[in-house]
Amino acid sequence: MYYDCIIIGGGASALMLAARLDVRNMPGGGLIIEKTGKCGTKLLMSGGGRCNITHGGSIKDFVSCYGNSGPRLRKCLYRHSNMGLASWLEENGISLADEKGNPVYSWDLEDAGRVFPSSHKASDILNLFLEKAESNGWEIRKDTEVHSIHRRDDGWEIRVSPAAEITSRNVIVASGGITFPETGSDGSVFRILEDLEVSVTPPRSALAPVYPEDYPYEELSGITLEDVTVTVFQPGESRADSTAGRQTKDSGQQTASPAPGGHGKMAARMTGDLLFTHRGFSGPVILNISRYAEPGGTLSVSYGKAIENLPKRMQKVLESRSKGPSVDIRTSVLAGLLISDDFIISSVDDNGMVTAGGISLDEIDTSTMQLKRFPGLYAIGEAIDADGITGGYNLQMCWSTASAVADTLIHKQV
Ligand SMILES: Cc1cc2nc3c(=O)[nH]c(=O)nc-3n(C[C@H](O)[C@H](O)[C@H](O)COP(=O)(O)OP(=O)(O)OC[C@H]3O[C@@H](n4cnc5c(N)ncnc54)[C@H](O)[C@@H]3O)c2cc1C
Image (cartoon, rainbow, N blue to C red):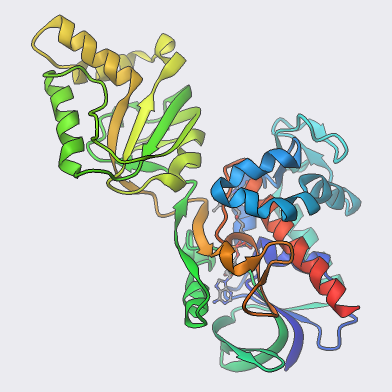
């Protein structure tokens, strides 16, 4: 079996590519190989089943939403923007809406915020992609897992189970990341690529709750504080130093300002809403900053304006943590906690909404998404070393990278 294009994975980015690329006129045609029995499982989970497909505003503002990877994706995002995605969806019968259900139009995305299909059903988006993939001539082989990829003179040889060898002129890696492995995205393709000596940044969970050591706020579970500033520091000097800083705070022997030198370099600072859970911190500001959180590092919360309106339950917990031999010391410890409530990071939840890390952008020409050292091999979506904040930026990145490949392969045919 010799194909013109094989896509590894049948998730959002694979289906976006298949929806954009007509393979009917290619002699070998196109094949999507999906490990599980279903395509687009994560797409169906997106936005709590409502599918926050992209975000409003200027595409220029998207660049800063993908950490250090953003500037490297600039060209790709500009060429295949949120407006491009929205107008393609409209042309194909999907009307759009904002979070509250107000209509949103591709030509007026400025203040749209999070953008959804107006039905608020991810299944409408999935069905459209599947229909377009079929009408574009793509074959989909489910329950088939890719085990290895080898270079040949005229393309690529792929071994799959159930046992078969398939060859293709072009191979597009769209195998996602490592979180929610039950959806099929288990990172197995990263190991296959490492065998080929493709550089892969170690993948880790992101857009995830962060769990600190000695979490004192279990009883506040379910409470959200608005506009809280969170700073994440890398693991720094010895952990004992950081812990000592906190212990002296608790015992009231010092003012509660952060222990100097108790943590490493600042990794990121963000402001937004914070949610207390049973085990740790969540909410948009935590999800967005989680990609920088490392076990042993420090997470510092500054409650900012939220201080003016702290829930009674929280005031009680803070008071109980502000121990000291005199009122002055207790007041000073409390003031310190409100400005900088420091925690050693124990872990980041394994099941983040996305994966940080993946196929190194150093390997990829981001205008075509082709791997520079491996002609005919491409990578798109969450499999690449780029991840966005919450708000539709991750599906937009799937669209932009998939469209870059579609344009390249259309051009290659000519
Ligand atoms: C709960 C949740 C909510 C989310 N909400 C949003 C949202 O509202 N907006 C947003 O922008 N993003 C959201 N995301 C992120 C977004 O869904 C993902 O970034 C996106 O689905 C990634 O698409 P992908 O095609 O790159 O990877 P995936 O969707 O993970 O697809 C990869 C596919 O590859 C297959 N595969 C893996 N290995 C192999 C192999 N060896 N052989 C064959 N097939 C293989 C897998 O089975 C899988 O089907 C959310 C994610 C989650 C988990």
